[in-house]
Every structure is written in structure tokens, then in C-alpha cells.
Length: 191
Image 1 (cartoon, rainbow, N blue to C red):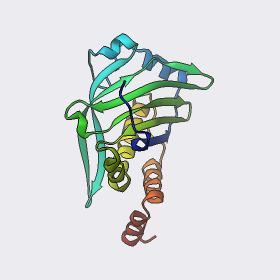
Image 2 (image 1 turned 180 degrees about the vertical axis):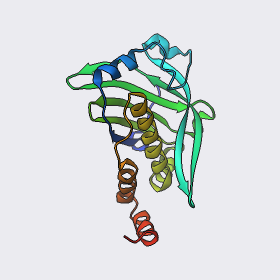
Image 3 (image 1 turned 90 degrees about the vertical axis):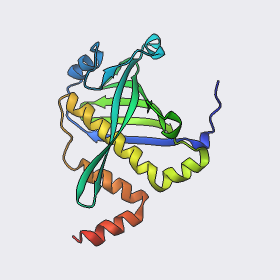
């Protein structure tokens, strides 16, 4: 078993409003092939009742008046669907398909309710404690925005577009953790 330094783990919790039929969502997750997520990959996880897919995780960024999207080849695994009162949940992990030691590994839970989709878990930034410091300065924003992109993909697949204002909510969340970003935004867009 590999020992993990708990101080080198970062909590990631991102949610998005959505309008979802739980019955249709359960049917969609039970499908034999979740083509919307990517190409099915044969992996040892199939023996562990997990579905494994090769896909591109995306990081949308707005840079100097242009929307840019960075992509990273990844392996996404989904555990068995659990149905509870008013919610669906499943374990989820993602990791880089290439150059794995240079990118974070995420493990957590995807939860779907009639009005919200959420991913909640932990990731280990590369580089141990130095990676944690870099994550606090910059990479944490990338992790949250990638998770938000993933939630939008799930919401669209399950028949719901993101509720209005989600990108603004994400920006405000980033500003709470990075006050200098709020100052720059306010200076650029005085309201």
C-alpha cells in the first residue's frame, strides 16, 4: 500500500445548479456505454465494477478578450450508481492518461439531485508540499474550472443546461480565495 501525506491533499468541491430528472439520470448512468464521456477503456477497474473511459478533460480560460480551452487526455472511472432519497451518487476518479506524475489525481463522489450536480473529493497536486503551494497560488483555479466544465458536460448530457450565472458564481468563488483577482476585475469593469 502507498502512504499518502494528508497535508499534500487538496479538497475540491464544486457544484452547479441544474434541472434533472433523477429517473432519466439513473437510466443514463446505467447505460452500458457512456459515449458522451469518451471512449471506453479496458482497464483493471472493470473487474472492480467501475466503468473506465478515455477522454479529454478541458480547462476553459478567458485570456485577453478570447476564450481558450486547454485539453488534457485523461482516464475517468465511474463506480456503481447508488440511489438514495432524492439523489444519485457514484464514486469518480480521474487521472492523466499521459505524463501522469506531472498532473493531479482526483478521487471523490459525483452527486446528482433534481436541482444540483456536485463533485466532492480530494486531489494530490504533483510535487508534494511544493505542489500544494503552487496549487494555492495558481493550480487550484484550474482544478475548480476543470471540475466545473465536467459538471456542465454531465448536466447537458442529463438534459439540463447550466443555470444562469454559474460562471459568475465560479468567478466570485475564485475572488474569495484570491482577493487580488477581485481588485483587478473591479478595476477593469467598474460597475
